Figure (spheres, rainbow, N blue to C red):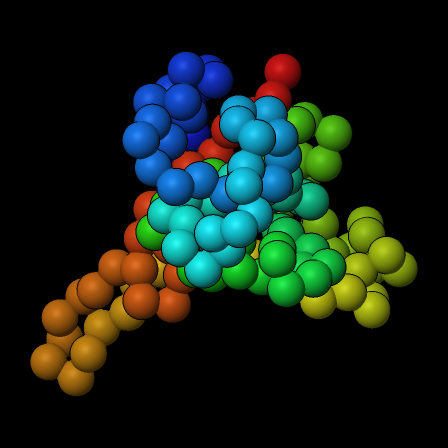
Amino acid sequence: MIILKNKQEVLDIIKGKKVLDLTGIFIFSNKDFLENFEIAITYVDYVSLEPFSFLVIVEDDLIKKAIILPEIYIGVYDDKRVYRNPDEIILKNKKFLIDKEFVFIGGESLTADIEKELISGVHGPAEVFAYRMI
């Protein structure tokens, strides 16, 4: 996972691509191309510092598509929901998370076939970026 330092870095990545921006920060997305977007941008609900990863609550099919289908995923977060590790996220928020469907995103999707060839992006995004709002 690569941490982006400023908004311009995000704009450079999404330039000329079909983008589903569920944050509305970077572009106004046309939701007509839900099956064809290359990049998805969403807010993340919690951030773990060690290992650096996101917890995203899957509230609906649109969020699910945004975190599974694109080639590139950009998670947007702020400092209010940053925790040391995934255990701390669960322990401090278990009453809220108990009945929620959520996913941890720790980086690009990687899988290997029987011939031990490592392939990126089969079960999710091939590239994952983090953007911290200030």
